[in-house]
View 1 (cartoon, helix red, strand yellow):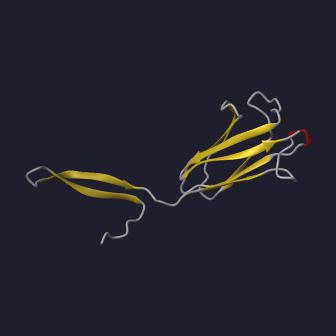
View 2: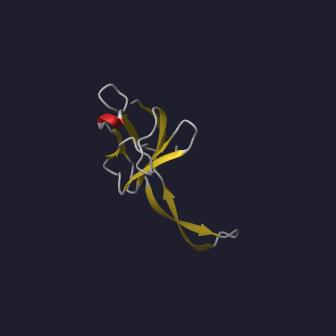
View 3: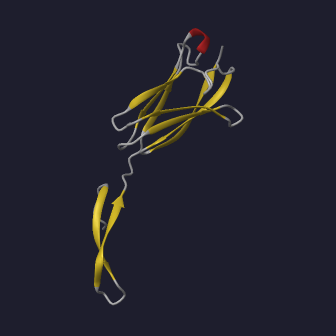
Length: 129
């Protein structure tokens, strides 16, 4: 039976082929818990930026670090990138339906890819004007 291993850093001894201790190394053990992502649109489930509606991108990361949301159009082109400095306890980002140049995007389906500690997830949303 393998003992339970908790996430963290463990120092392990290093030996040469003759069995002589030659030093130590740090072994980093990552957790298996995954983060969470949710998308919440306007009143009817889609986002209408003409009415001031925004897409709320909720998240909970598994550890400290930046969380990034990248929004792509149906051709795979990057439309906008948003980020939060530390998503450990969770948080949200808001997309106002505008591209990186400040222009309101066309109606259609958009992919929202969120990555950060324990998060690597893509979800769909709809912009409808």
